[in-house]
Length: 257
Image (cartoon, rainbow, N blue to C red; front, side, top):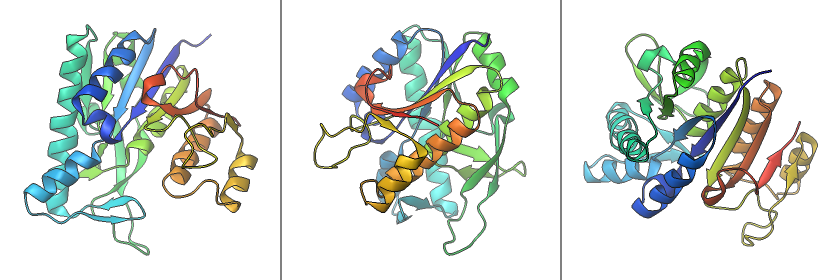
């Protein structure tokens, strides 16, 4: 029987505001067993770009990453946000290590090809070293994954944090029974985005397609759910989308095969 590991992805203002981050890490520290934390930090990157006079460009919710923007996201994601989380976990007695994909070569990507949009230095993950992550986990070290990968040729690549979480979970499913939890500001996937109580408790792939056709699920929730179903298809036991105050996954939306 495989051991259990919980992969928690958290982003948005939750990791960038002191009070919400503190509450999240208190809850994360209470999760029993092996665990991994994946974080975003886009708002901090946008703020830093503005302070440095660098224009932030977004297309379909994705950041266009030119060379100057790449420098900023590397500083912010791999440094400021990541190391703050690691330090806060050490304070709580959790022995954590902050990782980008380049560290220990845990996550390799290829630069996204130019099609309709040139996203610049953005990576699409093609390889994850589950054995390296597994060694850390079995040594009771908690990986804290930043949304950065590398191409093996000395270049860092900006990579979507939901994708980092999904690819991490899929790779670890070779070694563990994995639960993937996506945390954000809402209580789950909502039937009505203006009604926080309209959480859809369970979504199957068939439901997902119907909800897209009905315009119930739109925008950034679509790639989040696509990542979720991809993880299920690759052996992840369950995926839960919920609010940051319920990272144990007892509420929210359960994604089923």
